[in-house]
Image 1 (cartoon, one colour):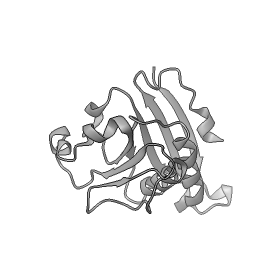
Image 2: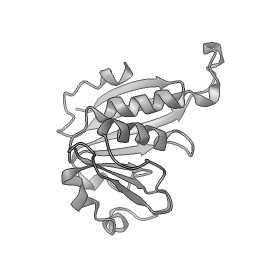
Image 3: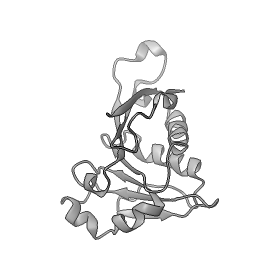
Image 4: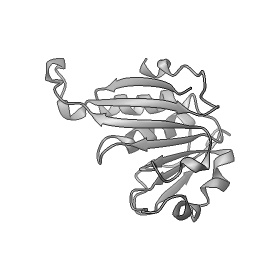
Length: 167
């Protein structure tokens, strides 16, 4: 059974806050796949995850280095932040990054990872970020509003209530 939460995010700061709330659910060995168009807020969400996990270093897009490791400052799991946008292949190309070695003791977050890294783990969180349209009546700039769907896949997330992410 896949558990799911849908969250409306109105500002970049709210996206970071969602990342902090999400971090509270994560443990070593967790895989998080982020998808959404360019500029959707994937890296902003990951910044919040990094804050929530208490990791060292500024979380920025690893587009050109492909992957960055942010060690924990408080004895928790490291954050491995991967941007698979420029990687065309599937798991074979990703194997060069040794993510399977990092995964057991880290939280691995992969932007643009759909169809590329699912085989790393039988359980994962899939986070899909869509830009909302037609929200002018809310009095918020339409360009900042996002609809985020978080889906738990596999045994780790079976029966897990993700509704608290919408707090």
